[in-house]
Structure formats: C-alpha cells, structure tokens
Length: 152
Image (cartoon, rainbow, N blue to C red; front, side, top):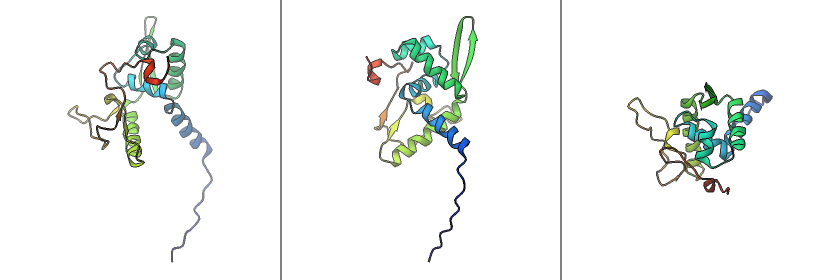
C-alpha cells in the first residue's frame, strides 16, 4: 500500500508571475520571430522592420517589451540603437528544452538554426527533433515576409 503524503506548499506568487511574464513574452509569434532574428546578431528596429515586413511602431513595441523583460540589450551608435540578445546561450537552452517538450507531446517543431546550442567546434548540437519537423526561419539573414505570419 502506498501512502501519499500531502506536501502542499503555498504558491510562490512572485515567482509564478515572473515565469508567466517570461512565457507570455516568448509566447507572442512576433516577439519570438524578433528573438530568432536577433539570434543571428544585433539589429536595429529598422532592420527588423525590413526583415519582417511590419510597421516600425509594431516592431518598436515588441522590442521594448523584450527589453523590459531583460531578454535584450541595447547599444547606441550615433542616432541608431542596436539590439541583441542579452544571453543567447540561455535562450538557446530554453529553445532546445521547448523543442524536446513539443516532440514529446507529438508536435515537433524547430526554430531557426541560430537558436540552437553550438558545441566547442562550432557545430549545432542535435536536439533530437527530426529535420522533417516544422522549420521556421532558415534563411541566412532570417528574413520573413508579413505573409509568413498571416498578415498583409
């Protein structure tokens, strides 16, 4: 006979809210696409707008949200601001874990190659998700048209 003990502990509300905020941030397809673009290197809002085919105000809003969450860093050069991922390795680890969860739930998907862990030889570390899985953003400059996201 198995005895199940109730180890219920109170929910840590601030931690739960922090997780929810992070997942909400990455749960938006446009913000996730921006993260994909920035995984290939720093970009200005203008560059992201051109790659994604979205209005500058839309891209600026999403970049601000990502920066507010601490996922982006900004570097000013003249009148331009260049954005990059604050910790690309941590985001790659999160993407890799997410791909494993999606595969385990029968919904294999794979984001662009810039978001995958790289070993010490510069080669992509295999995530276990088959290449036949859905692949997003495989172009060198990571360009996307508005049509890709169902907008026109």
